[in-house]
Image (cartoon, rainbow, N blue to C red; front, side, top):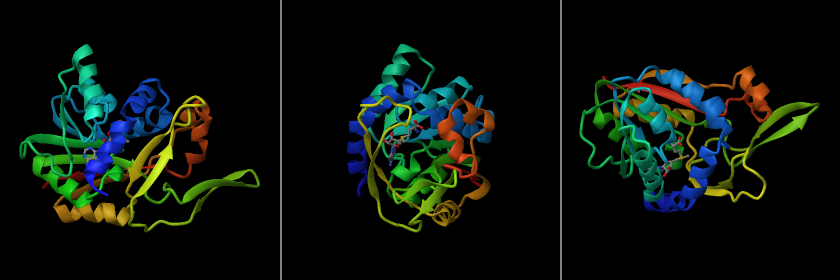
Length: 255
Ligand SMILES: C[S@@+](CC[C@H](N)C(=O)[O-])C[C@H]1O[C@@H](n2cnc3c(N)ncnc32)[C@H](O)[C@@H]1O
């Protein structure tokens, strides 16, 4: 599957996605992944940051509020249109560009302290090209931090079950190297909400780590966050991830 096909899928999702995220239906982001990811990244004030696969810009704006000078890049013109409209309504100094993070065309070499990417790399083909582009735009010593769905515990062939009152996860396939087109919606979205249709590119943990090392990065962190007890109390749908992480976060440095 080519990136232009991925762009078409996300263009079709853009309005629904933007409304649902901003309505707070993405509980996994708000109560689980973002707290873990922002803690992992640490302070960003004064840093030049690139957000790769920024979507409609909710997380980009959180980094901007933290004091980052930030540029968001996304493949989907419709997502970027929503991001730019919000920037116009409430300016935070964010620049948004349409483009593929597998190229980062028009993005200057060695101009960024930090490249972040939240929940986007598993939605794109050509991981090696993306990681090479991240290395190119980072300054020496600059850092790459990305989150993806956990390669071992999330893909189309898996599903939760229940035995003697205990949740278990059935894993039917892991080392799969073919894109899957999936339809799903946020669990907190009201009944009748139409689902998204997205392409997902399964990769093993070894594939992710090797891509980062082969590009020339040094690994400087790997986290498999589980939701806090407090988050599970507030959002019981997160409880089954208390011991089965839904996300993987990786950090790496350009030498
Ligand atoms: C699940 S959304 C996440 C968006 C945003 N990072 C967030 O956390 O809300 C995935 C995004 O990745 C974008 N994307 C997928 N492949 C891409 C690529 N090759 N280059 C740039 N963006 C890409 C999609 O257009 C989509 O907006």
